[in-house]
Length: 114
Length: 113
Image 1 (spheres, rainbow over the protein chains, first blue to last red):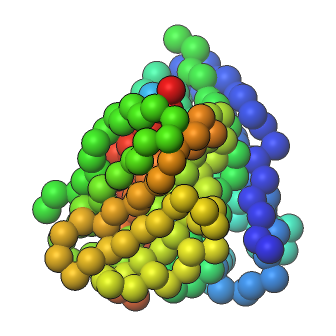
Image 2 (image 1 turned 60 degrees about the vertical axis):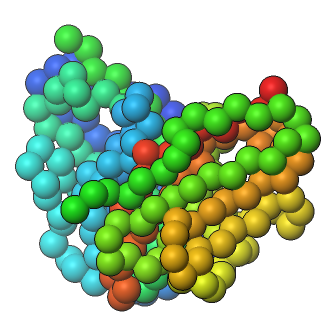
């Protein structure tokens, strides 16, 4: 069974600094996708970034980037120049290719200190 | 293009009542997923439907829960005889055919008193 582990229940970062959120996963599949979702207090699930397993290049979306280590089954999220609006729960998620359900980690609560 | 719509946003039911949660996917999306989020937990998959078909219900509790996605109208997640443990946020996500992107609705928060 596929599992996603987020080992940091809570993290904090000073405004304008950089923070890295950890995620590991377990799978025997070779073709899959990895995601980071943000859930602010409104509870809306917002896709932050996506990585295809077959791509060696790490995905980047503005201040958000990932460090994808396929052999280690690791998928960390780096947030640069943190802003107050980045405060939220962050969920790492995985799915195999095609129309299949997402498997989520338990989340990391990120606080941003002004 | 409107996003995924869910209603109601908040639903309060007494123990033993029925809860009906609705999800209207994005226009052109024919795949719907339901997830449940318990307090302080990640989302857990419940059921995956296409129009008029249940594709995967491996995450659905065997009793009291059912889901449908009719040819016309929204997808419905139905919980009969609710219990306090059903209190959670229920999210719907939709996807177009043949892609890996899922778009989430705002969720329905069910409270059972």
